[in-house]
Image 1: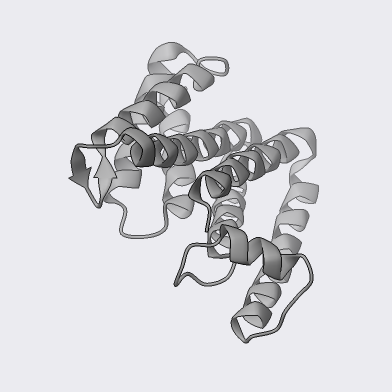
Image 2: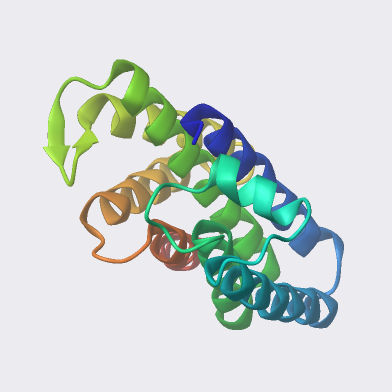
Length: 182
């Protein structure tokens, strides 16, 4: 597994979903996300049972962490996006998925490259601060700076302490923070 490549794919995949949500109406987007999740679970189950699926199996082998269910991260990302789309306004969900895409990718990349100070759950202070900084700057294009900083910090705190997959928690926390602050 190539972690930098995995994180770049995570970033591009996440920004693509965010853009898709912003570009299309809510009902169409919900339908596509549900269809994607359904198809993803079928493919994940088939791969975990030992079937080789052209292209999909290669992607999973190269991008999935060891001992993880096949496609787990992508499925949780889509599930988190779906949950947020059901409960929050579309523009808030767009920003929340931008937070997830940037924060999760940058914290991992910066943490593995520069992280020396472990703070919690094997996460580094350097990675967390880099993620908050990059996410705040990007969010400033969408919301006021104070809202951007609080949202990025809240999402980073959730990533640090969450007992479940961060692809589920980060967008919900980001959407909650944005909804409360805007």
